[in-house]
Length: 227
Image 1 (tube, rainbow, N blue to C red):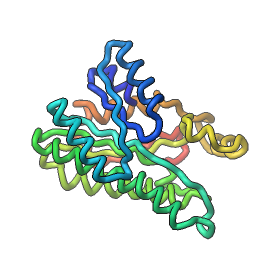
Image 2: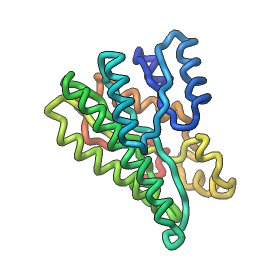
Image 3: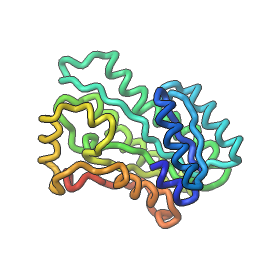
């Protein structure tokens, strides 16, 4: 998503919590292709740090046009085995972190009377999944947040939308046992996982002027997994 937005001319700030080397690798690749990018480390679960970092980014660049709230973790367990600590950890990143990012960004966007906010939810937030109560709840929460913020800030010309990817080939999904992967893929009519590139395209669209009349929408990018 960072690479695709940079290719369209955006100056991209790549956030990381622990993956500094990976973030800098992405930034280096964007710069090598003539794009503009930088890495910025902060944990979205730390509300104060998030708000300070985003305010600093906006101050240094003089604007903030697009927020892609994509940070997410999953701690899987059956509900009766789900510990409060795990639930809180998932919630703090996936929900509270997303709100913190949006809140800090909206303060800047309101002054410009323009902005694009895109939350990355999940097909699991719409259909549920056994063993993922915490994750599904957090991703479902993003849909309510999307619709509420869309109503709150439409008059300021700030659009707020969500993408609900299905099975995507990422570092997180690579850690899932092979049998579970195959079972998931078998439920996808297109018969395969998505690539990161296939999630990037819809993100660029929602951030573009072509999507200026779309707000409060949930765009399913799941290969037909949920219709």
